Amino acid sequence: MTWIERTAYPQFKRLTSARVLHVFFTPSPEEVAWAERRTGSPESCFALVLALKCFQKMARFPSPDEIPEVVIDHVRRCLELAEDVWPDHGSSPSAKAHRKLVRQRQGVKYDAGRARAIAAVAIRKAAQAKNNPADLINVAIEELLRLRLELLGYTTLEDLATSIRAEVNATIFATILRRMGEAGRARMEALLVVGPDGKSTFNRLKKPAQRATWSRFRDQVRWLDQVDALGDTDAWLDGIAPSKIADFAGEADAQDADTLSRYSSSASSTSMRTSTIATRSSRTAASIRGEEAARSSSILST
Image (tube, rainbow, N blue to C red):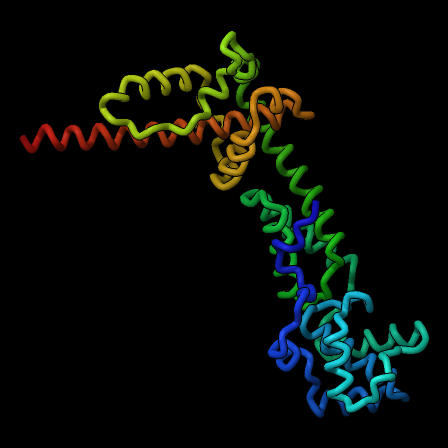
């Protein structure tokens, strides 16, 4: 799965507007003169100017097949070149030298190893509270841009986000499982047992809590008693970012008992069930407290 469309990773859009061409891909006279002094042919000058404008917009060098023809045509017209002139760096060493010139002009460094290490640290820190891979990738992009480092390839960032998120979540799941103890784990596993009615206790417990009107008050209290009997979910989830808990709960909400029972990691399945129940419990308790307060206020006003 790819999340690139949901990230801030710079890429060309399917349609490039006239405004974008004018604002981002129109070279200034100074930029053209700079390129002409460093190249020996219209083709290499074209290639250097095009690389400069793309890098200014994207903080990376897109591959030739990424660059839309409309962008190439626009830069060609700005340089007043014939239609049969195409950008050509020349030899591989020349292309490498051109990239170095662009980085120097933009004040950006190319250090893939350092960039990867910095991105990994940023993603690992963010993964303590964020769970969406696109969000993690965006954090890495922001940090690399802040430090004026050339962006890594998208696949590299995606692989980092995926693997580090899995490591962080595995640590969180293991922590929750350890806090539960054997008895707590057994109670949570029992939630997936399907009863004669074809439904599991987990599927019943994860239903959204209805507003605790007085007519439903006893049902809600019984629901909370059943949840409380599972164990101290607050203690199990202590110190874990609410945003992570919400994401775990959301994933569990989308599954049924059979799917969760087939998860490759029992720790992740159990932790997501715990997150769902804790979230539902918190909402139900708040609803009951609200109803109690409203009823008390009504009694006092009479």
